[in-house]
Structure formats: C-alpha cells, structure tokens
Image (cartoon, rainbow, N blue to C red; front, top):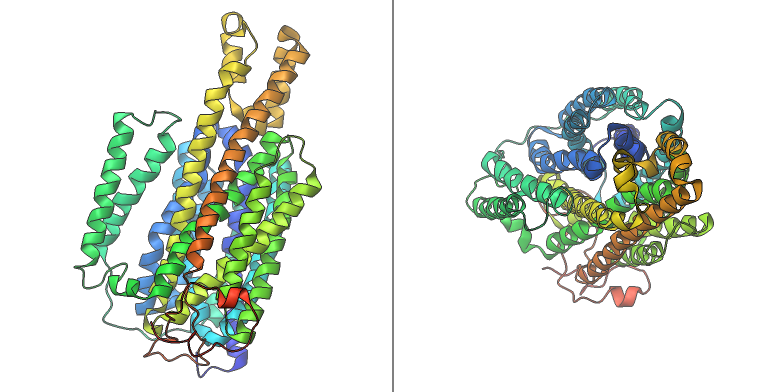
Length: 550
C-alpha cells in the first residue's frame, strides 16, 4: 500500500485490528473457562487437549496460509478464515461430549490459523518497516484490551450463563470483523509462480500429531515405556525427518531452506519457539492455579489474567514506540525475555495461601516481558527478508511460536496429570477404599477442584460418613498436590525462558527501511556478535557495524 493515502491505510489497519481482537478474545475467553469445561465433560486427562486441538490445527495451517497469501493476497485468506472460525465456534458451543469439543476446537483452529498469520502479515503490507514498530504497539494495545476483557467476560459468563456462551460470544465480533475487512482491506495483486508444498505439509502433520498424542498419553493413560507411546514417538521422528528431506527437494517448500541461511530468521524463530512455551503455559495453567489450588471461581481466575495482559499492553506499546523511534529492536526483545524469566521465577513459589496482590504483581511483570517478544520477533523477521516472502516469513515465525506453545502445553498437561495421579493414593482417607469404592473414585477425580457445584454435592454426600475434618484435610492435600505440580510447570518454563535469553543474545541488529521495496529485502541482517547493543545501552541510529550484511 505504498501509494495509499493515510486514511486508506488507517481504515485497512482498523480491519486488521478487528480481526486481532477476535482471535485474541477467543484465546483468553476460552482459557479461563477451560477448567469448568473439562469438569463438566469429565475429562481431566484431556485438559490440555481442549486447548491443544485448537493450537495444533492453527499451527499446522500457518505455513499454508502464509504461502497462499503471498500468491492471492491477505484479504481473501482473512475472510475465509473468519467464516471457518465462526462456524466452528457455534459447533463448539453446542458440544455434548469431550470428543466433540476437541474436534470442533480443531475446526476452529483451522480458521484461527488464518486470523493469526494474516493479522501480522497484513501490517507488513500496510506500513513501511520503520513505521511497523509503532503500529505493532497499537496492535499490542488492542490485543491487551481484548485479553483483559476476555478473562473477565469468560469468567463471568462461565459462572452465570455457562461455559457454552464463551464460544457464542465470538459470533457478533466475527460478523463485525468480516464486514470491516471486506470493506477496507484492499485487494492484492496475484503473485504467480508460488505453489503449495502439499507433500511437505502432510509430512509435517505426520511428524507433529503423533508427538503431541504421545506426550499427552505418557504418564497419564499410559506409561512412558508403553509400546504404543514409543511407537508414536518413532512415527513422529520419521515424519519430521521426511519433512526436512522434502524441503530440500521441493520447488515450493513450506519452509524454504534458503531462508535459514539468514541469521535473523534462524534466531528469531528459535526464540519464538522457546518463548511460546512460556506464553501458552501461563495463559492455560494460571487459571487452573486460581481455581484448582486457591479454590477461586472462574471469574476470579479471569481477573488474575487481566494484569498479565495489562503488562502485555505496556510492554508491547513501549517497545514498539521505542523501536520505531531509534530503529533498534534487539535490546527490547532481550529485556522482555529477562522479565519473563523473573515472572516465572516468582510463580514457582505460588501455593494455596499466596496473597492475591503478589500473584497480580507477578502477572504484570510476566506480561511486560511477553509484550516485546511477541511483536518484535515478528518485526525482526519481516525486516530481514524480501517483501515477496512476507507472508511465508511472518507465518513461519508465528508457526514456531505456536508449535512451541502447543508442545509446551501438552507436555505440561502430562506433567500435571502424572504428578496428581502419583500422589493421590497417599491422600485418600484410610479404609475408605474397602468401605466405599465408589466414593474413592469420586474423590480421586481432580475435576472436583474446578467444579464448585459438584464439590459441594460430594461434600454433602460424604462428609457425614468420613467426617468433615477428614474430608477438608483431603481437599487441602489435593490442592497442595496440584500446586506442587504447577510449581514444576513454572520451573520448566523458567528454564526454557533462560535458554531463550541466551538465544536472543545471538540476534543481529538490522536497520529498518523507510519504505517497502517489493523486489528487495527490507533490510540486511547484521553479522554483529552476541552483545546486546552494548549491554542494552543507549539509543540512536544503528552503527555501520550493527547494520552490516550477514
């Protein structure tokens, strides 16, 4: 849109913001309702899959949408994604079984992949590289606004109307997004000569899906050394190896191996993968901590996530504005990852009696770190590669973030379920297994901790038989057991974030171009060493050494 007026750019940007609002609202609304959803559908072992099915489907489709959008433009991809997302949202709200919910969430993810990838790519179409930092800050504000509203709405709707309505609220927002995009986002000229890597996409699915299933089953429904689990790991390894092999031989690879020669592309994607683990782990497992460990309502878990997203707004807006002002982005990414590490270090100590003010403080710090990493890593990739590959490059960065989050949440789910199952036998009241086996089965279900109505019914039925004190002692022990499992999750997230900080130290510092050149890279990546802009020192334009070629 180099020749478009400022009014046309802002109207197009408004359409992109509406789509971003829709996709981010879905993430946070569903996140706070998930514990109650799983409790009602009686599937704690599949807690992570209610999220993973969406994330997996959206992740696998990201490279496809990126490739298609480089050929036909962002607008038709966005419109098609909105339609698919809306239809699947209605179906998810009507789910009657856990299997149905997982399937419809996967269908929702197919549409969500278009929303996630095209939002960031369309901004690259509308604005010049030097402007993108500032407007990424605005997108961070909208993301934060919808994310602050989302947890509150999700929690309140779940506690009042029921969890099904957290899916139905997507419909009016989707209708608005469709109309704004249809009217204001301009059509792009078709770019022939780019095809879709169908075999590579199929092999990517073969390599990813068995891995996620194996991680979900291990230590929950099957042991790690179970032949089926080991077979799934083996199938995943073969699929991923075959995928890599095809990428070097395909005329239109899903991930062009030539792009990995660029150090910015390599480092930014690796950092997105690692930070995605922490991002998605926080969104999914913090509500479980509030509802399961502290015994709060779905609404209270939503209010706790609000400071997290408020921190995202602050971090994204400030870092975007500063990166556009002085042309540097690496120092702000490094600062963001460091703040994430601090946030996870604090959450490791959360327990049943942790004060709410301390939880809120940790969430603000964690969110302030997530903000810069979520937007500026995408900017770095867009800045380093040719404009003709904008869709594929942007989608690749989102892919690595999503696949990191998907793998992380799946592994975290296996950790939590396995930890709780191993510790439950020691918590059960003595002799209860012989006298009331059905009661034991009920007490052994961690869903009790996320379903106040069911918990009250079980208390009324069993407290007279085993004694109120013994029943309360069991529940306190179960909450402590779940808290210990979540502490392990946050410890792993801290370790991974520390690795991400070391990776970001290798990120080159490029100079933002003033205008988009459709025929050339928007910038040349640097070959500067691992120092972080002089230990994250002062601003000003990049030095010649910092903006040299790679």
